[in-house]
Structure formats: C-alpha cells, structure tokens
Image (cartoon, rainbow, N blue to C red; front, side, top):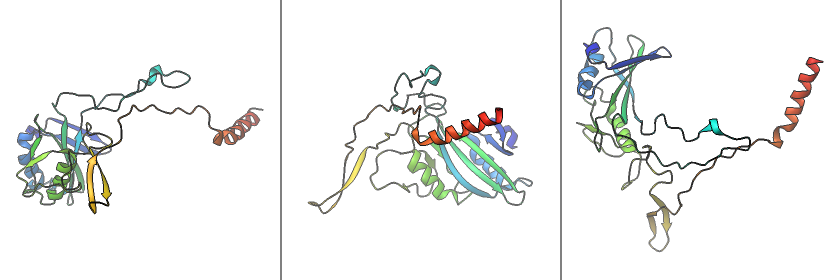
Length: 220
C-alpha cells in the first residue's frame, strides 16, 4: 500500500505532492504506475531542489533606514548540514484518470547524493535524470548511461547547486596562437553586492503628479 510509504503529503492548487523514503521509491513508483485507479503511466519531468540555503535571508529589511539598507551581503552560500539537502521530484500524469501527482524523495547524506533510477519504470526518465545529474550532481543508481547532458566536456562542478560560484570556475576564449578554444580560470574577482534603492525616479514624476491631481479633484 502506498499509504505505508508516504512520509508527508500536501495539496496545493488542486494537486498533491507526497514524500516517500528513498528505500521505498521504486516500489511506490511501480504501484503508482500499475495500480488500478492510479495509472500514473506518464512521467512528465524529473527535477532536483537544493535546500542548502532554504529559509535564509540575505537582507534584514526590517532594519532598513530611510536612505537605504544599512549593510551589504556576500552571496556565498551558507554551509549547512547535508541532511535533507537534495530532493528529487518526479512529476507524474495519469491520462486515464486525468490526475497529476508529484513524488518527492530526499537523497541520503553523502557526496555525491544517490537515489535509485526510475528508468526501468518510466523509460522517459533517461534524459531527465541525466540533466539532474549534470546540473545538481545527484547520481541515479542503475541508470544505463549517466553522462552530462547540457554542460561542456570537462566542466567542473554542477552549476545549479546553491554553492556553485556565480561567476563559475573557468572562462572560455579563443586563442589565436593555438587556433582553438581554451579554458582558463575566471578573471572576475568576487565582490560583495550592494542593492540599489531608488527613492525618486524622474521617469515617473509626471505620472505621479497626474495621479495626485486626479485624487485631489475627486476629493474636492
């Protein structure tokens, strides 16, 4: 029974999301595909969520002053426990029942994070899982051909991870002496970002005066 595998569930916008343990992922997926009344025979997408900085605020806006924010912030990801960092989400569709369902499973702690592949259940997961591996570094155990899909050969890291540098690790340029494209360390220096707060903008002054005059005439 699927109910014995579900750790949590939520309904939002008329669609349900269920969380299952990684040990019960394959059994749950087979049941969802084969059980009468469920028949989730189509996997429409597989994605990954990195919860590394989930719930963290970069800006303490409650302490903002009349002239702007009182401090700047570094965009470097805050280090957290790897527990429940990477969640793999499967988007399912039952054509016969006209229902959609999301199944979420958290990868166990480890580097790299590993979850079972569902290619044997839904063959269409092949490239979805390759994309998730490429961008987030999640390994899908049992996948027949788990190679990068979107990044270049020799790419370093996984660009959708929250701790991946915003400027990347290498930059590409054409070297006329070597007559080929070469990779070099990024030349951009890390910097602290400071928000730009615009209190007055001349582009909107005419519109504001017009709106203010209309309100005065209404009250008059």
